[in-house]
Image (cartoon, rainbow, N blue to C red; front, side, top):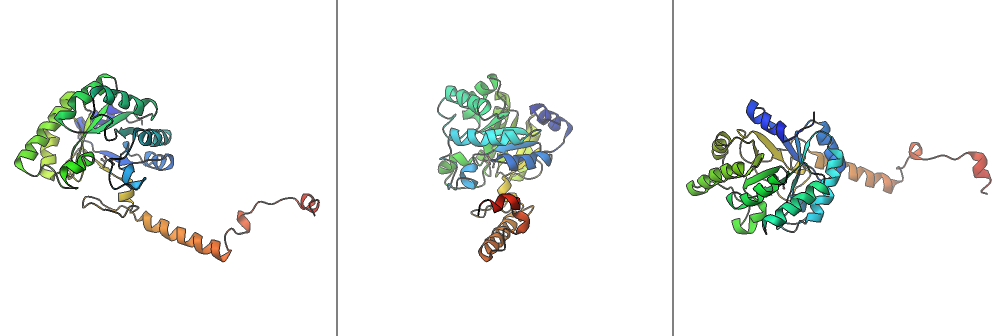
Length: 275
Ligand code: KIV
């Protein structure tokens, strides 16, 4: 069944958990979609896991549109949510609406996600008013990595926790249909989850959240540059891939691949005319 923002609303009302995973290409999106995951996020984490940057700062609108369109072609039932990259919405409400529109029109996303609380509410409201669903993102917001001074747990002081709870209420008021909570203490995520009427999607925020999201390379053991504490490795596909690449390398070099069954044939009478 097709997942929409209404699926998210109904899940919160019924107390049913929501699943979200990142994807950046057609074939992975298709596998995730076929597995029944509710939503696929084209995260700007593509800067790290696909493009090899140290952070998400350099990711462009063109990068996001390109990957979102590929994912959208593979996602038949999952709600496709596309991240708004750094400086595509912080600069003005106008920029935010124009760029969210591009992610929907050119990237075929069903919703956009942006980082920020109260300060991002004018943008959230304007994008929602334009008919584009918005997922908010609070806690550790990687686009502000330079302001945070590194990847650190957020909302773990009284002031920070109060701000996080307040921000969650504000983004809900501005019209967000869901809010991602990244790297926050589980007990704070629990308070937010109880106090807002929209689903909370946790990543490093405990299991009381209404849903969970992970970067798929992390949960498949395909990205080893940095593994946060909150990641569970559901399979070691990275190892399987490495072993398969090495086997291919060995067989090519030994001349055992390709074998007879991988060859195309030609009729002998045609072949004879060539000599
Ligand atoms: O960019 C991303 O992948 C994200 C998730 C970690 C929530 O924002």
